[in-house]
Image (cartoon, rainbow, N blue to C red; front, top):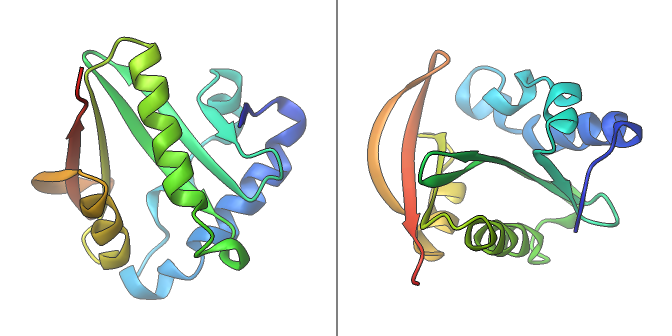
Length: 144
């Protein structure tokens, strides 16, 4: 795992597009991660990629929590444990930063994502609108 650099921007944008494009039909619009400014996120040091660029995670430190803003895996790499590895990496980063919890949100229609997060110890904390979409808010407390 490494931080993405400016030279990775095109590959990052392609990965996000390929990962989220199948969800457009399910939710009826482009998922929020497809609208993000990846040049700015990379510049801010928030985008972490696997060495082979098969997956990425966007991590944004907040007050008392690490926001998992996006987890994306290339469709041909689904089922290989990359998403789980990215989320484990997020936990390591939260601990490194001294943050006791992680939070994320996902579209209410992304049932497989909600199931994955739940299986990894995230709990639903509410539902709200995010950029015109219905989102499930989730949180995971880290053990000391």
